[in-house]
Each structure stands twice: as C-alpha cells, then as structure tokens.
Image (tube, rainbow, N blue to C red):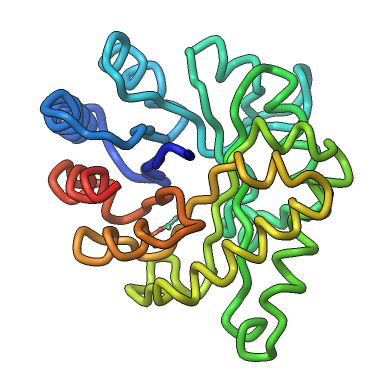
Length: 249
Ligand code: PEP
C-alpha cells in the first residue's frame, strides 16, 4: 500500500512574513490530522526558515532544484550536501520550468537525480508532455524518454528510492487539469514501464500527479489506482487550499 504524498512547490514566491503565516497555517492544519505525508519546497533561500519552523513537526521540506556537481566554482548553484545540511529530505528534479526555461536536458536531469540520491535526498522526478506532444499522440513516447534517461543512468533499484511526478506541461499553472482518467492512463503507463525492469519496484514507487490540482479536484485525482498524491504549485501558497488538498489524500 503506497502512502499518499502531497508536496507544495512554492516556486519563486514568498517572503519571510508570508512564509511564516503559511507555515504556521500548514503546521496547525497538519497537527489536526492528515493521513497524507506533507512536504513543502520553498525557494532555497527560505529553506533555513522552513527548517526552523518545521523541525519537530510531521511536515518535511525539500529543495526545488540542485546542482549535479558536488562542490566548487559553480556560482549561484546549490549542492545536494547543502540541502541535506539543512535537513531537506526531498528535492524536485527536472521540473518542466527547469527543462523549458533553463535548458535542462534529460541527461542533466539524470545526473541531478543521481547526485540527490548520493547525498541521501529523495528525488522527486518530474516528467510530462507539452500540449503539442499530447495532440500529436506522443505523450507516452515523451514520458518514456524522460523516464528512461534516469533509469538508464541510475538503474531500477535506485528508482525504488525516488518519487515520480507526472506533470503534463499544458496543465501546469493553466487551470487546465488532466481528467482523472487521462492522468491515471499515464500513471499506469509509467508503472508498467518500470515493471518491465522490476515489478516489485513498480508497485512500490509513488507516482504523484501535478498540474492545477485544487481542493475541488484533488479527491477524484487521488482516488485513481495509480495516483499516489500530488505536486502542487499555485494552490500550495495558501494554507487552507494546500491543507484541503492534503486532506483529500
Ligand atoms: C507545479 O509547478 O509543479 C504545478 C503543478 O503547478 P500548478 O499546481 O500551479 O499547476
């Protein structure tokens, strides 16, 4: 039985004051009882604040990105060891914004996945197709390519210690959610692709859905057989909406 996980990706949003309010709200709501595992991924500069406020609570925190390099002359970058130094448990890898806006390739993302795991972080690997790729009938080919790049690099056993997020790019921040069935079909495809290498790993890996998840659509998405929670952008910036999604898990 896979536990539901709900992770908030704050992207480049927040301030000390706004984060304090948001984290206080999330902590209070989670303390009232939520069965899902709850994770927040603030901008890196605010991770120390999240660590201070969340230590001792059931809410975990993580990074939104990391360098594939261990240390050295890489101005502006943040290493896996720095994230673990701040007690991050998770890190998002290969978000579509990193792929589209910062030119991250499948090969680089595979390196980042490996670097995260080498430091003891749980990588949350994002995969998903563009609208034109879906319309051309290429969804499975795109997702398979993105997944295989990581699988080929780290091997199936390592995938067991990671998390996958299926995020159709056309649904991110657009208010257009994949229907539960559209999402389920791709989640089942991902699981079946992993099962070709190891059925046990495929059964165990959590596969989250991301793309305009809101309080009013979370429950039906999370009820699908292969959807094990969500990666939440916009709706994770407000405690009540994030908590409502966490409660749907
Ligand atoms: C995301 O950025 O991972 C995401 C799913 O964003 P949103 O929920 O705003 O679509």
